[in-house]
Amino acid sequence: MLFGRIYKNGRISIDEPLDPSSVGRITKKRMEEANHEKATAHDLRRTFATRLLANQVDIVTVKKMMGHANIATTAMYDRRGDEAMQAAAEKAVL
Image (tube, rainbow, N blue to C red):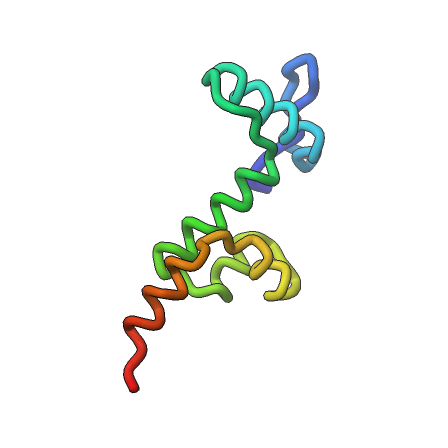
């Protein structure tokens, strides 16, 4: 198990999986400490996937890293925008 459960009182259990609400609490706390705009754990997942894709990591690998069962789910995380399509079009060999 990569991450154990973190309880509100700070106790950590390596025998239990990390709870999704813990991820949200940790993310919120870290954003506040950094005086950063509000971001959710899901925003961080979206950024993670987008940056991997922007760095030419293939979508199948990103899918596996994200734990998605379906590649269409991974594609919904892609926020590269029109610049990525333009760059791909410029690389196309006709």
